[in-house]
Structure formats: C-alpha cells, structure tokens
Length: 256
Length: 303
Image (cartoon, rainbow over all chains, first blue to last red; front, side):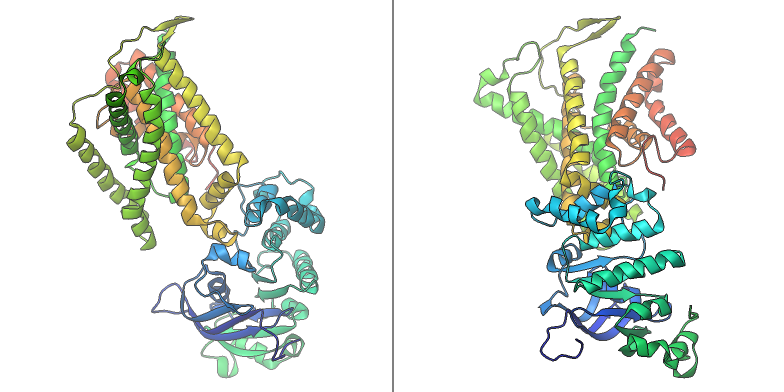
C-alpha cells in the first residue's frame, strides 16, 4: 500500500515546525507522508518532540512553519475543534476523557458535531463495538479503570467514523495485559481501513502491530522503515541508548 | 428573635444565589475571579430602570401597577431587554479586555486585576450617567401579606422568590440536559480536550458570559425592586456572591443557589443575634471557614 505514487496520502506534513515558544521549536522541520490504511508508529527518546508533533497536527500545539495536509486538504490553520469534522481524530495521552461527565455524556458530547438524526445510531454502534462501555453508561467517566478510560477515549474519537486517528501514547500508565488489549483494539480499528498514527514509548509492543515506524530525535526524523525490520535493527538501540552517532542527541531512555 | 428573619434571609439569599450562579459559571470556565461581576448586577438594574422609564414615557398605561405588584408591564418588558443588553455589555467587556488578555496568555492575577479595573470603570460610568442618588423602579407602597407562622412578605418579594426558583431550575436543566450545557461542563473541566472533541471553546466562553450576565441582571433588578437602585448595588453584594459560589463549589449551579440561601439566612440570623453592623462580616466568615475546612465547597469536585 505504501509508496504508491497515485494515492493521496491520508496525512502529510511538509517542513513542519512547531512548539510552544516560537524561538524554541520542538518539532524542527518534519516531512512525513502517511498512506491510507497504514498503522504508523512514531518512536523516539523522551523529549524528541513526538508528542508535540502529533499535538501540532491536531491543532493543540502552535505551528510556526510548514504545512499539514489531510487527504489532500491543507488543514494547517484549521482550529482544533474543526479538525474532527474534517476527519482527523486525536486521542491525547492524559486526561483524554471528561471525568465529570458520564460515559454516555462523553459520547453525546462528541456526537454533537454530527447531524442530529444520526447521533443516536452512531452512539449505539459504539456501544456495540465497545460492550464494556454499555454496561453502565450513566456512570461517571472518572470512575473508569485505566483500560476502560482508554477505550472511552478511543470510542469518543471514533464517533465521526474518521479516516484517520492519532493516539498519543495510549499505553501510558497501563498494565502490560491492558496494553496488549489496547493494541489489539487499535489493530482491529486499523483492519477496518482507518489510518492509525501512534506515538509510543512501548517500542517493541508498538512495532509488533505497526506497519511502519519513524524515529524522531531532537524534533527531526532520524530514521524510518518497515516496523518488522526495525525490531532487530541496531539503530533502534543506538538512538534510544545514546550510542553511536546519536550519542549527542538522545536522552536517557531504555528499551522496554 | 422573630421568625421573620427566615423570610428576610430567604429573599436576600435568593438574590445572592442568582448572582452566585453567574459567578460560579464564569469562574469555572474562565478560571479567574471576575470582580466586575457585581457591576453586571448594577448595570442590569439601571438598564431596566432606564428602559422601563422610557416605555413609561411612550405609554403611561404600561406604568400602571399590575395588581398585586408594585410595578406595571413596563418592568417585565424592560427586564427582557435589560437581560439582552447586560449580556451584550459582558460580551463587549470580554472582547475589549479579557479576551485580549487571554489570547496573550496572561496570568490569572493579571485577569483579576483587570477585572478590578473594569469594575471601577463600569461603576464610575453608572455614577456619571445616573448620579449616585438612590433610585426606584416604582414609588408604589406594598403591604406585606401574612403567610402564617409569623412570616410576612410583600407580593413583590414572593414573585422574586418564584422567579429565582424558575431561573435556577431553568439553568440547572440547561446545564444537565442540553448539548450546550454538556459542552459548557466539558470546557470547564478541560478546554483543550473539549476543543479536540469538537467543541468551539470561544463560542462557549461567549455563552457563559451572556448567561452569567443575564442572571446578574435578574438579580440586580430584584435587588432594585426590593431594596433600591444604587451604583454600589452590585459591588456591595460581591463578597456574599463569592462566598456563595465558593461554598456551593465552583461550577455547581444547585450548589451556588443553596449556598446563596445559606449566606442570606446566616446574614439575617446575624442581624437578629449580634446586630446589623455584623451583616457584612458573615460572608467573610463563611468564605474563610469554607476555604480552610472544605475548599471544594459543598458540591465542587476535588482538585
């Protein structure tokens, strides 16, 4: 699927510069093209700018240069709240659900961007897909376990049937068993044709489900390739453990 | 001690509660203590008075009191228009002042100080336009009705209590049952996530300003109707408003109303027990106790 010249990328960034201070960009010129249907994982040591990169695409972190194109449409200046209707769903790393709203209200809130008549059907479809959420829809979302929260956050993002979903470290703070459940869920979503971009610290587990990986170091793409090939590639250890040419750039981070 | 303090307290508490709902909503979404909120009460009362007076000039029949109340149809009509104008005033202040500071990423203390400035400017403008002489919606006198149990209240006072109840229920339903209420609660909890979920946060900020100002206007008109209209009307209620908003728990509509009644009743009780000069201290004492013992208030969520 990748590499087809005729396919319009699901997402493309060109020389993207982003960060919270204009003088101190965290993302420093990233060119990335993601083909429709890909499951791409963005890796890199702590502080490499992975999170800022996806936040900039989602419209939550300021962009200072370059462009973001979604299925051929320029969305660089589209405000965050309009990206979901354009087909880009984003799941932040922490605080990705409304704890003071019930499960059902979380979904109702997200469904508000859809035309009124289709909302109940869409919510029902999500309950069918995530039966755990349907057990007690009036329960406060804040009372959910870590894994269920992640499930609700993903369900919230999927409400508009987006062609692209971006997740910022969905495995953070979860037990290994729940991590594998979340990753299986992402694989299933990807299997339905949704393009998935995943930022992860959980390198090996992420590479097992991803089709392709990019490694971000110091706000720039240092390496990219097929996920399976990267699993055994010594470059991974080099970039993460600070050996070889990446010594000066990487921060302390261990391969899980 | 006469039981009448209960009625006095309920009436004062209703006005405080209504104003406190506005404070608690704006505080929960804008995340700063807006000390100019009291001025919205005063402006609401004066706008209603000016509009009602203008209507009276056009048609004197609209000034004729609607029995058993002390005012004619000009006041209800003026109330609707004043609510709109007070809402627009709040939006204008936000566009000119607070919105600019927010976009610049100003610290909370800057916004609070700016609200002090806005409060002073808005109050001075009222004194400039209307002078500081007390004014009244109507000169008609009202006889209090005996309600039993040693309680008495005028028809205006009972109407105000009824209106407050309706307003509180309406706002509570708006917050809990409608899409706009859900969006407001979402913005209050996490503005960034609300944006990601498709909520237009800027629009919600405008909605909350308008709603808070509308409630302030109603509270101001009631105060003007039951007491008198002065440029300091809202300013003098500021401490009770904040005490009630914090006691009720920031963001909680029923909490603000219940706490407003508690503050009003405590004030009335203090007047009975220790003397009228201590009335103003009551809110302060309540505020300090809540902040020390239960900072999240009665219905607030834990930080």
